[in-house]
Image 1 (cartoon, one colour):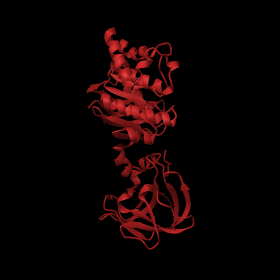
Image 2: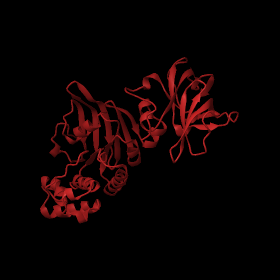
Image 3: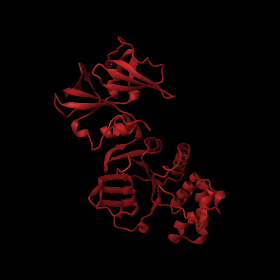
Image 4: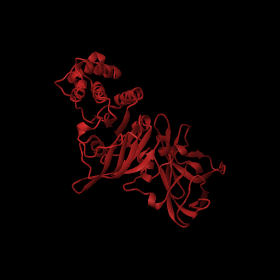
Length: 366
């Protein structure tokens, strides 16, 4: 294991920024630390880099406890959210800066600088100054500078947040390519769900200083462990239900009974629960077309929004619950009576204790 965080906790005065966070990075893994602003992501990065001394917990690099070690005594590369290139140095001098600090011989420095400028496709900018570069080029120089000392772990703290969407997407692909070619173990910090899911082998989703979920992007999207993860990774429809039986797991939704075979229930009959389903898991059919393999709810189309690649159809059921359905097919018209189908295997049930702090529903897709 390259990096281990063990029950990391940090306070700024009376404010609890990170609360009992533990996770690991395997060699060559690209892990995304994902969450909204203020959830503790940057504090974790600063603790790993040695710029913050955690209130409690341990930071372990290659089986060595570095919790109290200085930043210079940790083999960690970091790219910060804000640009940090030295304006009076050329591109090559900026990339060589960390090598000089580590005592790399001059002839080896030039070879290493050349290698990493070629990696980020900036060989021709060897003698240029930061002011002569575009924003995207500056970011690539910072990546080269962080990689040149060949660190155990590369920390990328919101490196694309100040760039426009088109440039972000280009650099995101560049980061993926560079990580694949170098094999460097990488922790990528972001608040952008799409960015994290496109890049990472695995996600750690943070909320209010704690880990709300951990897993592959597909697993967390399809089977979110908490309401916050359900709402933060894309859009979430939620609706209330009541437990009828634990075995087999059976719920009552209005006047309907629903048996869900892909989950287990630990709460007793009569307990209220919250159910979640993604908009792309729903379908709209004509009344009377039910096939019995899904929960079918009568409803009325409230609005239809054409968002280019799909339609968002808002439906209000007989119980006044509202659902958003994503469809690429020609949608029904507002005011039309329809049947809403919820596949049993696409529904996730959240029991009362699943509701993590600050959880929300219906967060728009980014």
